[in-house]
Amino acid sequence: MFWRRTDPLQEVGALIVRGGDAAARLARAMAARPVLGGLTVCVGEEWAAVFGAALDGGDGAVLPRVEGAIALYEAIPRWWLPVGVAIDLPDFARDAVMAALAAEHGIRSPVVVIPRDGSDEADAYAIQGAVPFARSVLA
Image (tube, rainbow, N blue to C red; front, side, top):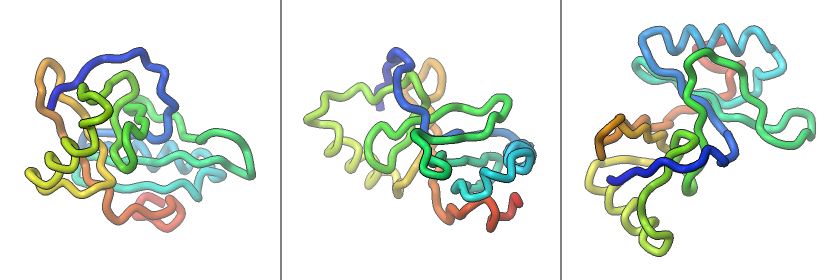
């Protein structure tokens, strides 16, 4: 897959935290703000993600502040990319190419895709079993 840098003008809708302490870091950030207990989280091996939502009828997604987290936006439905990164495909071909890519590599959406620096490769994190933080293993 080819990636390109873009101006970071996308609307942040989620965060992913990576590393051995990712779940603990996200849990601490979420616990510090109990009002965020309804946000959806997903935890994997050495990563954790949180998806923003408007609180109490407010506008825009609310997310915790987590040191070192990667801000994400929904590039196409159910595919999340880092803010400032775009899929380098023309719009008319994007859906078909992404569907073929998913089928070839066994990727099920929703998915967070983080391109590797200096490479056309990327790491994919399947968002399966996402639940509200208050009902998660992180709470």
